[in-house]
Image (tube, rainbow, N blue to C red; front, top):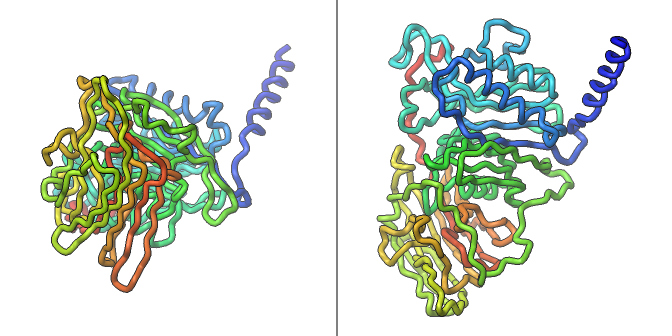
Length: 504
């Protein structure tokens, strides 16, 4: 009987093994998963790491992940539960086979090997240091991405460069790392972490070096009108026409949520933004660049009806971009069916061509947004943490006719929100002076805090000497816009004051 059981067990293992069909270099796509993950509330408990490891494994071994080649988890979901040494890729370490690494690191290495997946996990790293203000008792801390291959080996490590508020207590290297790794399915990835995205290096630097696929664990804070999570992530992917795998922590009450798989100009293949803390996995077939494969992006189908009340997100906290106070703006006259306007901020000008149609909502108790045309080029702040410089042409929503209401949304105690008109077309043109380090991306977001499907707008640029002309056009009717336009980041690179020696 024992022999028979063993045989059946062997057959089962073989079935599981053969069911995992990993992508090859010849395939025109790979299968990716990103996990939106609510952090644990407990900060100190004996069983937290065991429970957390079980949660990781729950996603990694899930039937929906059976063919996943690479899986990405968010930033900071470990919080302060564990600190671990992390080997460099050059050491070719498989923590599953070692006894001197933190429990969670060894378990993840074993999971990667057992389930034959590339895993990207963000951890609290401790590293030996020699001197510096953040070097305490010979150790410093980093916020670090760790990549395991299908053998469980650490093949890449990236330490966060640009810190946000309380993270300044962590260690910073003398110069940003440009970290990449190549997979057995023929794709080379780069990676960065959260706030890094708003600076040239490493994010845009990876793209300029020819990297077409980027992984991005984050703990992003929603900011309107231009820096809500999915809005920014799709815009960055579209402007650079790259694959962008974004895994976000899920803590909506702290402004944090938003994960997606974005395929460049195709837009989102899948995305989620949650009103309540959640743990959810998104899976998609991602087209390899220059391969003959058409993905299945989120589309405007089925039919969009401007007469219906549109979905809203009411329980996600957010903050307002105070830079808006300095914009040149003008209230959009919605009583007219056509607006053709040139709006300038100093020498920087934006052209707007807008068509609208009124909706008869007589007798209804609905409240709608006021809209402003906005133009701006100049200095500002990035989340009021670092200095930046921007070029912006956009239509933005406001809750009343005062400028300070722009970049805010109606709270949940305003139960019925709908505009008494809809946009048939919006065309925005902006002429930007060419700079060595800049990005001008499409910036769209609706009432549900989601970017518009990429097939509902056209985005293009044309270089003419020292000027880059950007064009953004809404091609399908919408009545639920919070932002539509061009968001330019001129990448004012801060001088990183490193606080640990480079001998690590």
